[in-house]
Image 1 (cartoon, each protein chain N blue to C red):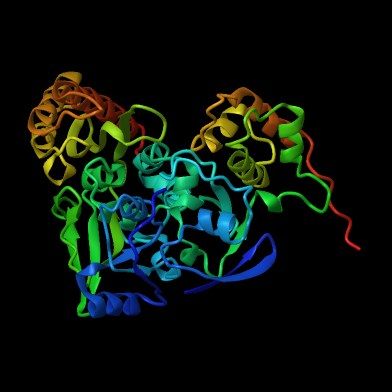
Image 2 (cartoon, rainbow over the protein chains, first blue to last red):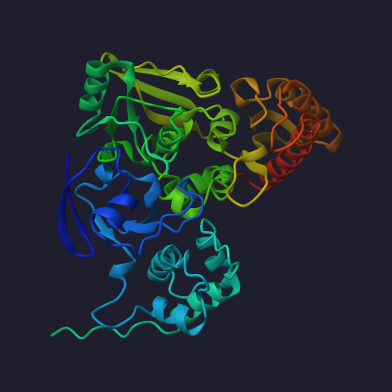
Length: 159
Length: 291
């Protein structure tokens, strides 16, 4: 079947089997390997991307279900050459060690900050509670998200 | 890599059309909403439907609204919406308490109340919740709708009364002004299925228990409920002694099985303890105006 969706602002269209999972669609069919594929059981959260503005675990969504929807992956965080504050925060606060959980963590963090710009440590931990860091680097991940909260991107000036 | 067996896929555009597809293609066809119960089963090949009908576009199945003395919840309502609903919070604290311990925030963005109930997982929190509150479930087919009591909805693990060309469309939660409710769950780690969970509501008349509902998850209780404990408590003073007697009946009459989450006696112990805790908190809420 043919699926068409917007991915990071660009319309893409591919012929897929209905059973293809969204995580494999973005990684293998679109070559967007920033989204990682981990536990395959909606536990680890490294495959989190946004569908219609909400974080979802893409190992548990069919590409067919994303037909007509708006998808944002970790590749869509950066604006031009400007890193998102969340990316900057992970860099500055050493929010990653092996980096495997990072894309999912960052996508959930961005959504959290869009809806709660000044989250407490508890709120951050709750937001990422469906995501696992096997390096156990949670302290720095929380610090990285706090850093992003304290350094929001400057609003772009409309031309 | 877990991949479902091949299937055909349709996107439903209306409730009637979805039911029409179920009729046309027969029992090998399954509805999919959030997909967070069905897709994992398909990836493990425990379920191999020949066709999926995606109902995510049916916005008229997504609502939480008051209708006279009931709260009507559309079956496509997501967990995250149940968690944040002011209407549910106003009448039933049990909803937010249960939702906070169901999976995790990202999964709650997708999973729906209808999917959770229809999955019929013996450890499903919302099943215990709707059975505690004695909700009614509205099931639609081509000929019209029928309503079943939540406690009569389950035939056994992963099995419900829903027929092959039927669809759960609405959950109707009674409102009892002034009643209190609570949910208690023990899980091995955040977001896991319950080792044991207990939900309840209590309605008081002065210090006496006027009505009570107790739901049990993960202990193989018939209809996810503890009717013996409810009967014991109804009409009695809301004292610790009475709660303990009711809780011990709940522990006695459920049928937990030993598994990787714990041995049978541990689960029975938890049923007793969590029933007492949930009742205590529900009574406290009822005595302070309810919710």
